[in-house]
Length: 158
Image 1 (cartoon, rainbow, N blue to C red):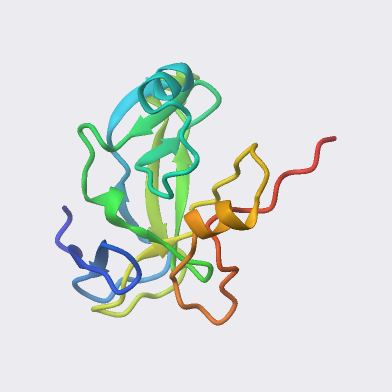
Image 2 (tube, one colour):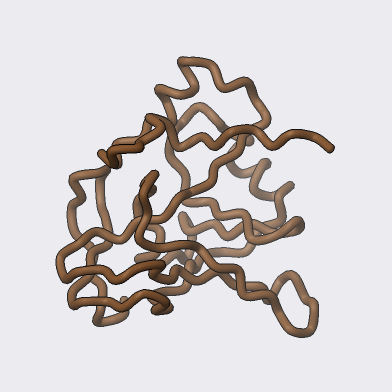
């Protein structure tokens, strides 16, 4: 893990990633790494589970998913927040090969030493967002504008 960030227990959830030094806005902090799977392979391995409330899967593009359960790095410990200080940025392959696309976590504001790194997971599920599902995907970020769930509003169909 880069020297600017460290992993330790988080007050938000389980493990977290924290700034080991002050970090300026716009800094590229870490690549989200893991085994590259097709969406079909991911569904086969994990059964398309939506009721666990826990995942290290990151949708890379229309073709692939990054599975940080396998060959993942410290980026998988960055927690969700409704008021994040980082964002996930897609770096598309200049040659157009979706297998070579990558995701990086970048700061969107200045982050103080000791502050936990967070980004909005942007989880959109095709299943109904019932109260039970919202409890399973509960947000514990503690932000004043916390939505109470990691689930994002469903996208409207065109």
